[in-house]
Image (tube, rainbow, N blue to C red; front, side, top):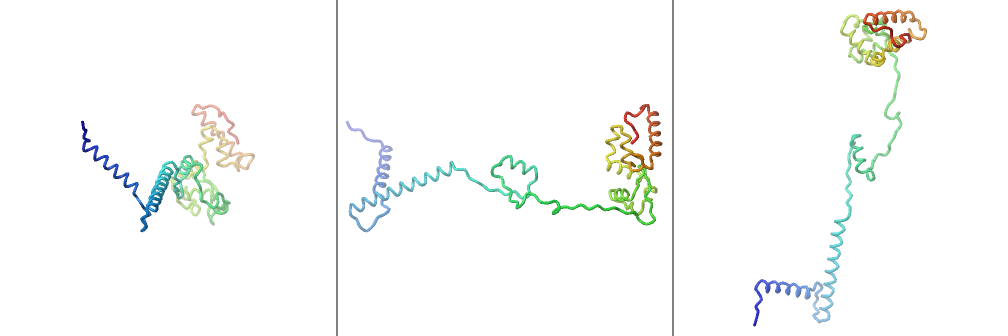
Length: 232
């Protein structure tokens, strides 16, 4: 009994046979000499060459898959939050290319004290709701409010809205809300006119009169005596 191979199996065997025969007879180093020994060594060299090239390619592929790659990214002038985030993610590789990480303050900033003298024939006595005094305060308040109070201090008396604004400026600039919230009347006196009225200054009598008025006002509102000593 004979068994015939199916066409598909036969075709598959033919392709395999052709490939194997092709590999066996492949010769990349063929020369004009056709002796059996020469052809044998040429084919052997071809197989060795292909094996080495294949092995090298496999090694390269494996190395590329498992090796870590380094990518350099430069961030110019990062913000503080950006720098902290980068440092958290890459603490070992983050680098700063700065030539220096510190410098003397004198290279980038300087301070200069300027005393503002009053203008000729101008008086800088207490004006406004908070009795703004001295040329330096008139200059600072005017600069903040956009008005030249150093040249024309009488504007505070002429313009009621400016009198209110200078009082608010003085209140905020000197942080008078802090002692006011604590009920520290003496601290507010030190801020407003401490040099003249506190520690036995020439205006001590004025301070005493002001404290008496303060106590009367508290009494009118039913607040009783101050918890802190109102005298500075």
